Length: 425
Image (cartoon, rainbow, N blue to C red):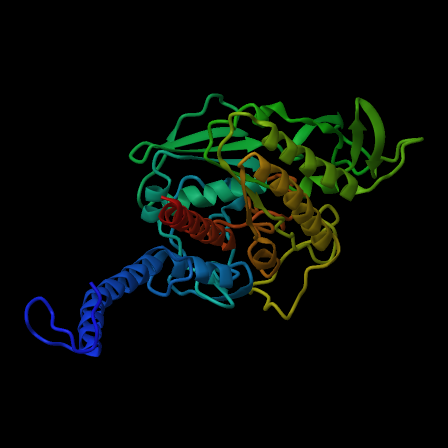
């Protein structure tokens, strides 16, 4: 039925066309506007709870802060509350790093903490760490500095719980500890060159041994044992300064300061690079390993006035400021090799769904010439022949900050997982 300007509706009331249209439009608007308002509010709610850049999301805020803040670049600042354990309260301190027990006269080296330039780094919380590592496992793969780190962690956890020794062997180079309340296992695997190696000559040209390194062969002592671990921290460096003979495909290809006839001196960096490449390749080749690989970068030594076997020592009592020294020479080269090989391994591991992370201790420890045992790793009256130790770290001491780094990294991993669950759940 067509309506014209002055026609009468069936009800008998007369309306003009523009009045009818006004009524219809009003009814439509009253119906649609509330729906649009609700849709806008709902979309804002979704954005605020799932967007990784939303200001109101606690997960995204933490991730954004982490992305913006490099926790490994900063300065050492005084911390009068430290240390958090002592040589008498923690039995896990290795004798050669028990500086206060053996008479180190100054204690100020224990009272510093690491402060990143762009944010704050919380002091290690042992209860929080154990809660995060409940039903998990952590392996330290490397040399005695890696063991130094594990013993520091045991001491920092001691106010909450001491672990039970569940080692498979009596060999002190392969230890396993279990925190029974948390079902958390921690282990150390001694592998100073990370790859298959053997003593070729106990003296060698420098009277410190000549080692045969098989640069393309895995060290089965640890590569066959890490499948079960959730995290592995891999490190190495100081043993590569010693004389070495390099093997590839079962034949000698060169050496580092071996002084053997008809053997080309390829230098330590050649072996160092190949060792890390093979170690990372071993990890990526494991079918059943589903854990996270953490590279703990090279921690510089601080020998002054001589090499480690030529009277060098480390007698400073305060940290450097970042503008007082710089990463250079061997320290820089070893660090760069580690990072280059790490990036290659990370790229390859990503194809297999593997996680690689960096615990970058190099800059922080470069600034701590005061943190080494020096001659305070034994009694002065003992008739022993030990070099001044400017490689390892006193406990308590600056190495305790490595656990601050580690805990922060674990917290960020948890936040990332939670964020990913919100985005894709």
